[in-house]
Image (tube, rainbow, N blue to C red; front, side, top):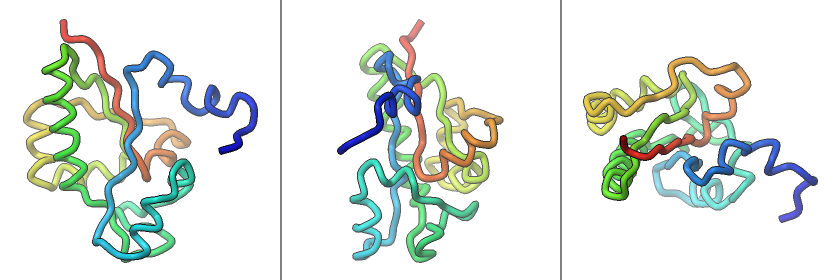
Length: 139
């Protein structure tokens, strides 16, 4: 895909050390439109979700917070098996309550997986369609 010079450096400078990664928010229910939105690649970053986790372009498409929580739990377990841990998760602050209402979200809280508490408004807005995970070596 063609990108303006410096595009990746500007938007994802934090990913350069190899310990940071973005994951697109899992959505449901299965549908033709959901498949379309899930196959947008980098354009997925342009999607917007409401505080309830509904896609603004199609309110039938919703973030699957339970799947997101299970994914983060699996990441934490895999990281520990490889000498790492999750240092921080960045997720839109309006979406965190939805995640923490799920069974897997409650487990994430009990395990102490850290979620950024406050974000600059532009960063917060940018993290409604995906979540950013920073890893660090175990001490």
